[in-house]
Image (cartoon, rainbow, N blue to C red; front, side, top):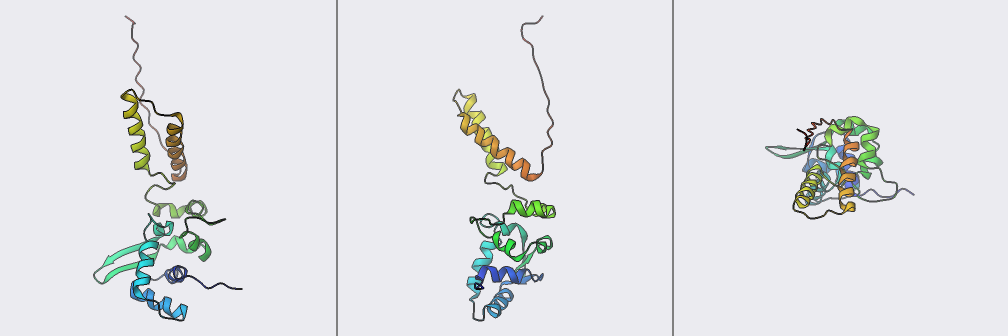
Length: 180
């Protein structure tokens, strides 16, 4: 038995057409596909979520451009290599055997350029702040738990691996005291 598609899935199908579309155009096409009237505010609300990379991984792959007539939405061309089901999975935060953004980037490395902000749960800014806070706290004589420090470093290393590696330049200064 074939299940009925959600409004989000029908919106994604519309974006997969390859056209840059405004909310009214998307609403018209989704209403046609659904066989019933879909309200433009419902479509606008779903588009706001789908195109926001902080709320939905698919947001990294949706272009949202402001024009004099409103926002125009389109899917990045590299995303057309994903199946519709894989694209739908990128809208979900949980689920057994769902297709993740990390898997999408592994499958299609060309998608990586669209995943601008850091991914993996800890952003580089948060990781950096954690390390700075840890260092600041330590320099005042306080102790940072091994587990907390390990979590910060593990998150950082996971992010480095996801981003494809890290180039490191190290300057080492050694001072010997007591030698004359």
